[in-house]
Image (cartoon, rainbow, N blue to C red; front, side, top):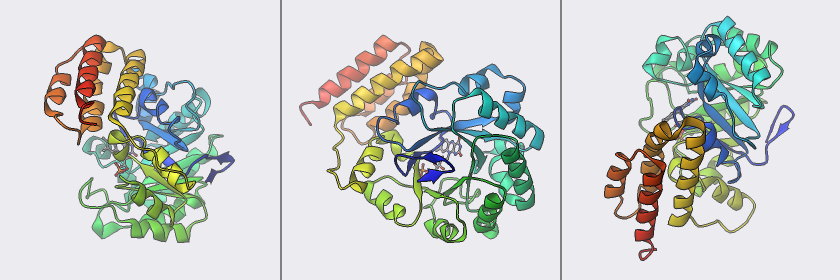
Length: 322
Ligand SMILES: Cc1cc2nc3c(=O)[nH]c(=O)nc-3n(C[C@H](O)[C@H](O)[C@H](O)COP(=O)(O)O)c2cc1C
């Protein structure tokens, strides 16, 4: 898949996940074969006001290439400022605009999926951004604001006309949040209506899902599925290349968690990082035997040494089982 002059090594894209897709997590997905990785969403206004935490979110880990950084906001001036910041001050290759976030706080700022309600305004906003940056711009959207207003085809065409280089579509409306199943029929329809690459997103959790979706779209974007199995990326890549699908062992999960914790500590400090590891750990060990106690334990742990020990002990205890 090609996005303007950027050739992706794989059609598999790691989705933006707020609070999760930081540089530490993202950097571990490249060696697994991700064609592109998208950052968590970054506020245009917070960049404008030099918010320290937000500026930290624009930091990258060595070797994160190609990276897309995602911006959310509403006002043309601050969105252009934010896009130019990502364009000139970060090594990302693509600037992604968030038109999918359904969270109340984001909607209150008229950002995220709020923008799906007004195609003309979205066109004006995105066209102005495209005209004021050098890097390719992509847009991530939903099917529409709610079931009565499904306008993804119209919006996709407008984004293509605005000069967008790629669109990613999560097959739900804003009102569906994350409930029910993603509807890929609309995504497939969009693919027949625009010439730019179309990336489909929603509920991909297996090699079979990925292969099936890739028959109809240029690329697939995976979010939650990577939290419990980041190797889904290399498994789908292997299947695409006719190779044997690699097995995921508990030890691979152990090593991933330990390395992630080490990298997170480097970017967020021990205190914050070890708390953040709760989410990653719970997702990674879901489905593994006897995981209740370790989940509880990790929720109280505060230091790197304690975290390492707890993870080592848990995975060692699994060895007789696997
Ligand atoms: C915890 C969480 C955080 C998310 N953060 C973002 C975000 O920052 N930007 C965005 O465009 N979508 C965000 N999403 C949506 C995902 O990128 C993706 O569209 C959605 O989870 C469906 O894909 P999946 O079924 O593969 O997870 C988030 C979803 C979750 C569950």
